[in-house]
Structures are given as structure tokens and as C-alpha cells.
Image 1 (cartoon, helix red, strand yellow):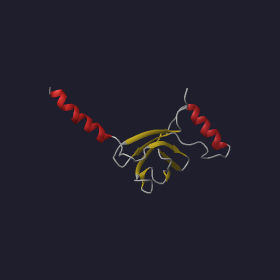
Image 2: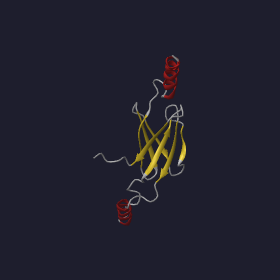
Image 3: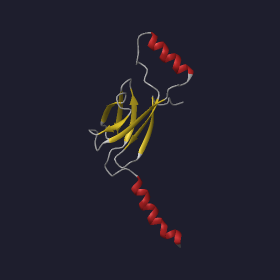
Image 4: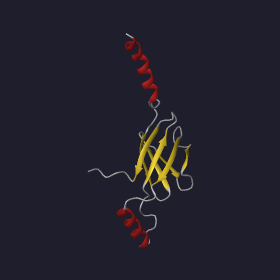
Length: 121
């Protein structure tokens, strides 16, 4: 009987954990050498200079989204060779950094992305 009384409480708690109704949600985050590009579910594109501020807030992006970029300094050997080769050929910054990007929406919900995104098998 006590379990039945908890069902409405659990349902209300679950409803509060999601994004606000009608609010766009992060769909994709990608990095270039200097720019973080966030794509929202309504098609909005937001950009920030992640090199100048690896942790920050995109205030002009809809209701405002926080971001944090954590670059993976020592990626696998093949990626290190590829990055070194492109740099040696004068294409410095042509290979996007390997990083984890965490986007925080106005409700405080974090969404994690990796950039570049993994290749589907």
C-alpha cells in the first residue's frame, strides 16, 4: 500500500528532472581549433571561443547554456601521428582537438558530447 502512495511522488520527481517544456535541448557540440559550435533541437546554432574560455556561458544562446571543454591531451598514437603530419605540412589547427564537451542547460541538466563524434561502425 505504501508503494502505491509513492508512485505519484516518483512521477512528479521524474517530470521535474527533464528540460522545461518548449525549451530547445542540445543536439550536438563540435570543436574547431578555436570555436565551440552548439546545435539545439530547434536548429539554433551557438558559438563560443573555447580556447579563450574553456569553461563559460553562452548567454546569447536562447535561455543561456553553460559549457566546459576538457581536451584529451594524449590521444591514441595514430591520432598523434596524423596531427603531427598535418602540422608539419603547414595545416596547423586543421585537425579538431579531441575533447569532451559538457553543456549545461538553464535547468542545470548536463549533456556530454565528444568531439569529434565517434564514427559509427
